[in-house]
Amino acid sequence: MPGSHRCLWSSIVEYVGEVDARMIFLNKTGFNGLYRVHSKGQFNVPLGRYKNPLICDKDNLKAVSKALLQVELHQESFDKVLDRAKRGDFVYFDPPYVPLSETANFVGYDQNGFGVSDQERLAEVFSRLAHRGVKVMLSNSDTPWVQERYKAFRQVKVMAKRLVNTRAYRRGPISEILVLGYYSH
Ligand SMILES: C[S@@+](CC[C@H](N)C(=O)[O-])C[C@H]1O[C@@H](n2cnc3c(N)ncnc32)[C@H](O)[C@@H]1O
Image (cartoon, rainbow, N blue to C red; front, side, top):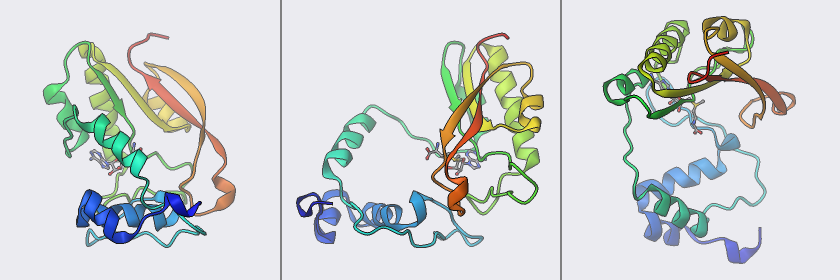
């Protein structure tokens, strides 16, 4: 990366504050931009393999900041959307994916994991929203379980680039499913 695109730690801190600067640093230097915490809730991602990461991208930070000015962010469980979403709203769920195999059960984004019962609850929430007239969309892995669970809705297969995988050969494009709750078959 050209030197002019890089900036020093102190200028990042000045720009976004200490806490955000730490987060950006970890995100830009950790393994493939992954965010994951261990059972005690602390950041737990191995070092990434970057030669010269662009840590402070001022133009992008400014653009993101501008885009977020009109946005309200809530950190809460997915089922809370049932309290707010009304007919005509658009809702997109990007949950931890159903594992592709018995051994590929990586669902540990947070200390609580995201197991089969959570996937079942999410499918139920999806269905209730769709029947309410909310335009609801969900992405998940292309597995028989997902196909079966959402069989009442239109499913579109997409090839998605996966950057976050511990094994490089699994980081190429893989088939995923987009479920569209606002179209019949
Ligand atoms: C596939 S990632 C989504 C990544 C996100 N779309 C992005 O581009 O960065 C799945 C996300 O679901 C979140 N998650 C896990 N359990 C959840 C729950 N019960 N309610 C809402 N979100 C949850 C995880 O924290 C994680 O960020």
